[in-house]
Image 1: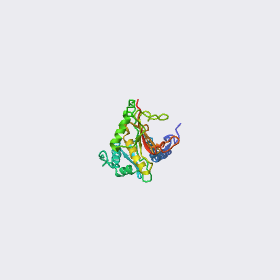
Image 2 (image 1 turned 90 degrees about the vertical axis):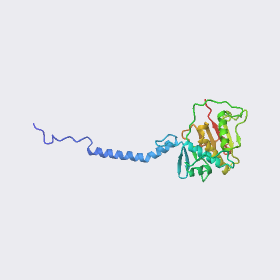
Image 3 (image 1 turned 180 degrees about the vertical axis):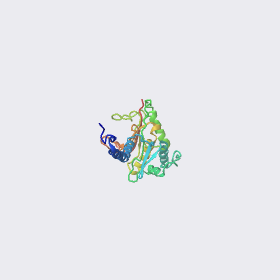
Image 4 (image 1 turned 135 degrees about the vertical axis):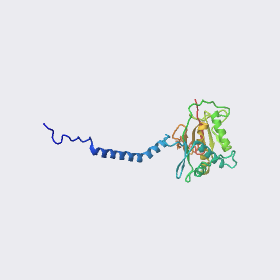
Length: 259
């Protein structure tokens, strides 16, 4: 018995031309999803402090035209130069900032055009290998004293509070009680003093890694070295939520406990 006339034909491949079309459609959908979602995913990771491929900036300054990335060294020099420039009789010479955009320096000096507020953010880098320290005769731990000395070198004499020889005792748990916190006052509350306060707050954030700073609180905002996000967050002041508790009239800075 002989085979029929179609017995020598090869069986068609599974899927045939339809499979190619299906693959093309899937590929188009995947590419479209990447194009649409990638910027959003990158922005989310960036805001959460997760390094995104190709990004290495430790600090950013928000300008009207978008964010400008700075290295930590640039942020330190920029905030120091602005602090020195804001003083009538500067105590030190301003560092070189020729590699920092003029728009960034102007924004750090004057603040946002519409309202005083935070412009500079830096990623947190809280050290976890520091020894715990005791209060000294000044009422501060050695780490807190180092912050005070560094501020004085750049900003000169300031109106200070939150510590005293022998220590202070505030209700509840407070870094002031441990001698780890300093308050720098900018009174009365005004637009000019708010901008002056932000110059100091930005300087502290830019130097947090070298001074082992933990928190900076000012003007209803808080920055934490424990957050890799490194962004200023709204500060939830305790009741009665007055100017002092909201930190409207002073910049609060404290250092890591250690241990």
